[in-house]
Length: 376
Image (cartoon, rainbow, N blue to C red; front, side, top):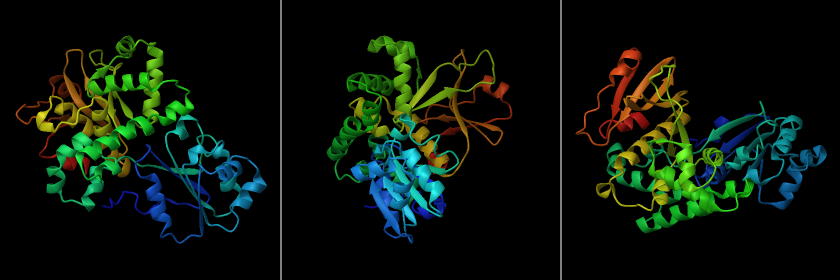
């Protein structure tokens, strides 16, 4: 089964003398996307990988003559796993600045940001696209809306990593998720940040997994794990940069009654979250389906905004009197409030303080009836 990705035509993203960076978590299909494009592209290209020692030597050398000779007579240079090349940003800068009309594509995981590899050298010289685990909006090429809704339990439990979606059995899905968590997602942090043990990282992620959709206190997390709260903050920041979790902050217009200092954390993939808590039961047999629903809707909305170029600031909203709204978007000068409801028997009313203070905002309930309009 082949899943057509949102960026199925990279030609639209390529520009002469600019680097197209395909960025995102490990194992989401960046290499597949690149190779599919190259198989039909019109340019004379060279494909190399950051694993290759010769490629590392050339592009990591900062040697103008060597690097320009490397690209001679090619229209397109493609580097897969470019984050493995030391000093890659400077090497790409030399290509962009000294090889006329060259087009460059690189794929890279979170190491790019963790190691600060490409930020400053490629300022004004790159175009970045982020590839996530499979989005619900990408499934419309395979399924109709009825079929997508009919498989909702699988999306909530097993998530959207390509290898998981295409696996034939639930047991196979579980094994793939375990491998993803233990062998890939923490790899960049362990390699680049010199964290000696993955146990503390996993313990911290498990605590976050149990608190999905709830406000998180760094001090409480630190006490439970037995490490300094500043270290907890640092690890959480690394998890964010590694596309494991997303930090959603509180919304406020400086009202004293609004809570803003705490954060909520959501996982980029429901399957990873469920792997951490070792629970793959179907949604009919779980007491955390509300958390799964909130995490699912948040991350699918995040993918939609990224892919559809919807520029919005995302928040949650809560007052000290415990009036709250699950998700807030601030876009186009307007404020939109959304409450996520799995149990349709529970009525969701617009909070009185919200209505009073943000009278020009909108408020909608996202349920199983209308959620596809929100994320597709």
